[in-house]
Image (tube, rainbow, N blue to C red; front, side, top):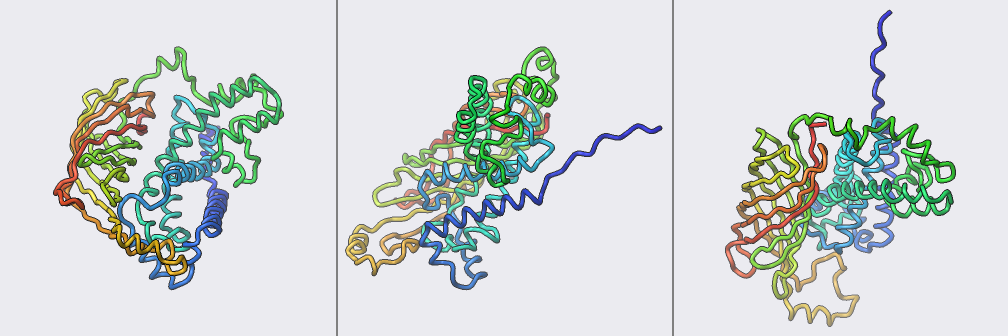
Length: 425
């Protein structure tokens, strides 16, 4: 008699995933139509020319939305879409936060789906570029959401997972009151709660443990957690061999620049491939909004650079690095003409252009130029899958004439964030 082969791995449940994703897209577009006059105004007109204009008008970093929309609302969107993927990924659905490969693999897979979901929502066939065509109009044009939604969405997911394990589960050890339990589960993991509703379950549902009425932590840990997850501490964990340095790293950072003595705050993402134990090649894309560009000015910068990085201790707990990058920078700015603005404000409201059109008193301009960056930083390795970029300090310079007539755009860039390491698990 032959021996039985390994059991087949259950794949992604695409039908429910796409159904739930479509429902989420519908909710977001419904909210836009209900609350945004500019979106409703642009529903008419030829489809293909309007869509092409929306795509062609994308430039720069900022999109005119308030900071809480870009840096809270869109990360939550990325987290919800990532949750939709997790709950339809049977192979990793029960993965629990910690120093274990299944968890980090599951979140990386979810982040990849969140990126695709975000791109569709921004510029896809059922997107802001087709439903309302808002990129046609002032000031909805930048790439900030394309970067922030998937990258910060991943951080939001990981943060909620840590809260669930170290705060909510510990609270459930203290009480069997179902109302207190469901309040904690539902409120402290909001993106998981919404994803649960989109698949037809109660907001406080969990794939890793039973409901709020019958959940008993003691047998659960014996029957599920210990058997399904590798140990996080103890002799077995300490004895696990190190399989080398990660060939591929993805990092997501918050950053602050000081170009020309003017503050600029934003974020970015980076992909690094290891060519040799001490050398990586990398691609960096990011942007920021100028905090103090000057009187009657507003602006933002978009950076895209590639280069090499030297990492003398890639497998150590503390890993310093030095790097040099070259590429380009695109600056976008708008100057307010006070006299024209005063005249505009004297107009009766019914004679002013709609809010999505650029007023006459705003002069728009942009420029691109060669850029370079040199500096270094320090990473703290938490486990095989994850590290913290404790600090990075670089000098960046772009050879661009700015609105004040200076022919360079240079200054210090400081950043910190999370590094995901792939290929060693």
